[in-house]
Length: 157
Image (cartoon, rainbow, N blue to C red; front, side, top):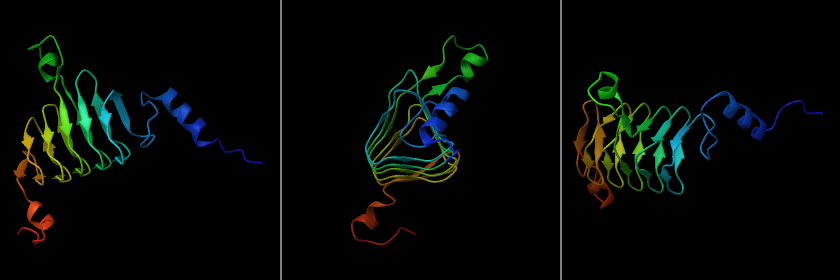
């Protein structure tokens, strides 16, 4: 006799007790709104994808580590009385993008294909070219960082 609940029952109870709706990634991934998420995408636990009120698109073959926030909303102006509304901006993450743990992708970001967002990086409303490495806070974009290696060269210095 097995007294252990099945995964579906656990997910149902978890969804009832939190605001985390069921998703195809991990029970502890919080998906808000209706983001467009491609095929073969991994999103690690304790990550958030907030697409409420804006278009958030994550391409195919992306790897989003744990503890990542992808959030189209910015409420600071509303909170301090400078606006009546929460500002919401689109986010586009193209195919084959890696986003490291504890990173934040904010509204207005556009990240080109085959790029890497290093762990702990804060990406604001910038356009990141394909094959780039993005590091730090404030984010530093190293355009084309991975292009040479993919073309048969060596890692950049």
